[in-house]
Image (tube, rainbow, N blue to C red):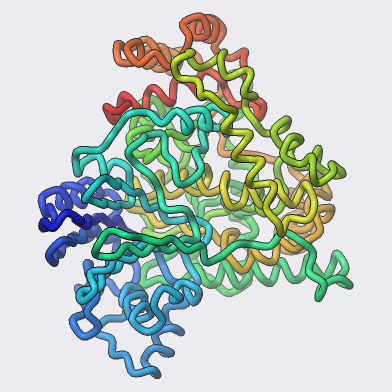
Length: 594
């Protein structure tokens, strides 16, 4: 887990080493253990290292292989790197390190861009072919590792964070109006390849991009999950699915223990993270460090789930850390969270992950997390209303239960000059739902959320907030083989028992029943859901700042109404509507863009 950056000049000039050095330098939080920059004519690659596998200097990056004529920078972890290393050695490759980065480089030398099909893990990489001048960029199947692009005439820059590209200089930082409409519709999600900034794009998940020396390029999507029924499993019973799912998760969790440093678990007390702990205990993990977080209550909402996380920790004998966040840390924590966001993210969970990661990083470098299970296995309350909806009506039904607001209502939150000419959000969803290999309306929604909404909300949230403190987070529920299996499960098994039924039933006897039968919980941060006192003042300051007034994103009448009664209006999914507007302004102001 690291930060990478680079530049490819297409105008005949040499790479701007100073720009790449600045880009690399601003990602020290992602890689506090080392740095490096390598240049070769029009290409410069930079890297910040978080040492997880092969802690020696042999694993440093950028990694240059003069035999194969390649330079690589890599962010992430290839969980099957040892098996691939043995296979590549049998094919004649010689290794000088025990790092997974070198496995990526040799795998590319052996199999070209098809190497990604062999990787089990999370990754983003850039590979430069010395002889041809070709640059290859790749991203993992579920987009767990980010890769942002700044592309202009004669120049391509790329980095693990938007902030790094901004540090490189010259970025078009105007607001993308289509992305703005998506932000206001999809709970702050802006699907790839867009970002909220017109001059920055992101490589979509499961995509390899090849850029030739002359600037021509091509993109290839190398993986798509199938959400239709598998004829070979037509006779499977619900118990067959439960057993297969649990075994697949068992494998995914075990894979993610690969490291040369200890691996802990973020234990919320919900079924997902509790199951991760249970399976690790089952596999014989001793002295497993687990971490949970709590905040002060506000507005009648509890701020912690220590009851359940302590129950799980006690059952499996973990070295448990209950982290109670003092109120004095929350307000500066909000500003730190916004600073750490590569893109504006409205979920109050961001603050929880940010502050939790700050404390956890003092104990371990790697953690497993339960993120992703709800999108993959139907745990949210917007899925049941889609059951029985004709497949051709799925996109509209999804919009009714998922969108924060419909196109006709955007004018209530966006000033006229910022409104898109068309209903771009509905058009995007219609195109997603029209694709094949999603059998029912529920299947179509789960595929969309797994491959789009999940990537640019909870997955990005976990990456940004943990890496703000040099902490690597691994997500076994997004093991691509687990996702492939889950996609084939009949939707009614997922929606059973109030959602994630197939997982809940598989977990019986593995985790305490109290965890399975409890009301669904979240990382609670009540002070953001119920804005008052200094938190409301911070929101008011952001929305009345001179920069906000100059930008004029939101109608003044709307701001006046929301500020007068800050906790009254909620989005379709229950988020604080005022926070959604304020968070965007806070992010734009923090990064001096827009």
